[in-house]
Image (tube, rainbow, N blue to C red; front, side, top):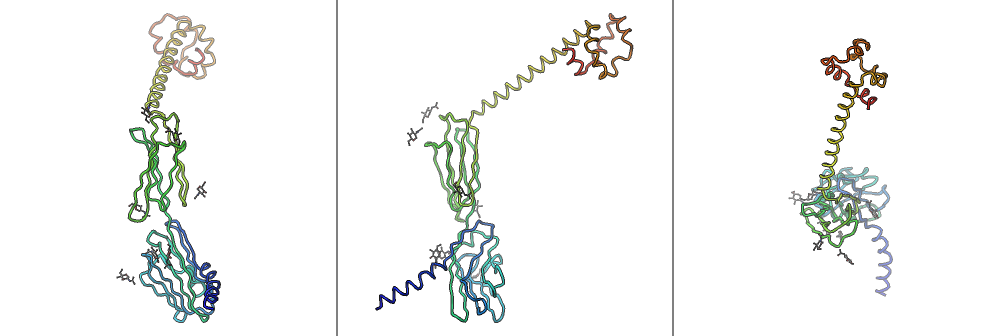
Amino acid sequence: MAQKWAVLAVLLFLPINLAEVHWVSVKAGHEAVLRCPKTSEASLTMVIWRSNSSSCYRLSYRKDTDKTDRENCSERITWKYSPASDPALRIYPVNLGDEGNYTCEIANREGNFHSFSSLTVIVPPTVTLTHDKSRVAVCQASAGKPPADIFWIPASNHSSQEEFHHPNGTVTRVSYFGWLNSSFPSVTCLVTHPAMNQTLGMDLRDPSHDFSRFLYILIGGVAAGVSAATGLILCLIFKCKTCRLCKQVCGPAEHFTTRTWTFPFSRARREPAKPLDFPERIYENYNPRTIYVCL
Ligand SMILES: *[C@@H]1O[C@H](CO)[C@@H](O)[C@H](O)[C@H]1NC(C)=O
Ligand SMILES: *[C@@H]1O[C@H](CO)[C@@H](O)[C@H](O)[C@H]1NC(C)=O
Ligand SMILES: *[C@@H]1O[C@H](CO)[C@@H](O)[C@H](O)[C@H]1NC(C)=O
Ligand SMILES: *[C@@H]1O[C@H](CO)[C@@H](O)[C@H](O)[C@H]1NC(C)=O
Ligand SMILES: *[C@@H]1O[C@H](CO)[C@@H](O)[C@H](O)[C@H]1NC(C)=O
Ligand SMILES: *[C@@H]1O[C@H](CO)[C@@H](O)[C@H](O)[C@H]1NC(C)=O
Ligand SMILES: *[C@@H]1O[C@H](CO)[C@@H](O)[C@H](O)[C@H]1NC(C)=O
């Protein structure tokens, strides 16, 4: 007989208890809303929230006085709505100290009702990917809660991991990837966490290659500059030696050299051997379009 009653009691209460436990997981800085058992709001007389978190010990409301009472409860923790209609608890912004168990007790004409909430605060880690002088790539997921998982692409059996636990419950994980023997041009660090996923890539090529490439570009640039200058000088010499031909070829360029032909062509043609004229005229003729046409 006693067994029968026990079974009946389990059947009656188990579904109710299961329905009234809430597992709430919220990102730090966001809003958490904790619910009370569903009851008819009309008959509510009192509601009490209790918690063992470091942020709130007790928050209560009495319908008859329409007053809220706080006992060691942070101002960040308050009612989501009007407690007389829906005594849900609102925590904003959530921080790590809010983690814990919260109980809602409602007293109304039908009796007392309880609901249970377990609040977990998750903190996305800060992810960095760097490398050190000994040719090791370092992927760090700092101060995550729960700890983040770090993977390398391509996968390596030469990676190792370290873990640091902080007093506030967050964990920093650091993974090292040696690439001394690897022929991969790049490596990617993949960080997975309930609050975020992130990938960071890094070029593995020898940084000295980059420097020599820079040198090549520099040398190439200088060489191109020198040859351009040589071409310019040759062009100008050639142009002045064969002034007549050049005038024909460079004819269209006259539009762009306004100050050059201040005296008529005929004069220049008639007195080609006047040496002092040349430097000035070469200088005045300096115009990229003219040079282009001459080359
Ligand atoms: C409330 O906080 C005060 C000081 O912070 C502490 O002395 C007291 O014990 C706390 N009361 C409860 C019920 O936690
Ligand atoms: C709250 O109480 C539960 C057990 O009742 C415990 O697991 C949890 O660590 C407590 N949280 C805090 C912040 O004390
Ligand atoms: C508090 O929450 C934990 C899980 O975080 C749970 O195991 C424990 O039963 C809860 N405490 C109470 C008193 O129910
Ligand atoms: C990595 O591990 C696999 C087996 O797990 C092995 O076959 C392979 O040779 C290892 N590679 C290196 C570079 O050690
Ligand atoms: C937790 O502690 C670590 C190390 O002291 C700190 O870097 C991090 O910002 C803290 N996180 C939070 C959410 O307080
Ligand atoms: C490759 O790694 C092995 C140890 O794993 C080392 O003995 C060897 O010298 C490395 N080869 C090169 C080319 O760095
Ligand atoms: C992270 O990636 C995993 C697997 O791809 C996925 O299941 C999960 O939803 C992602 N999480 C977030 C927060 O984007």
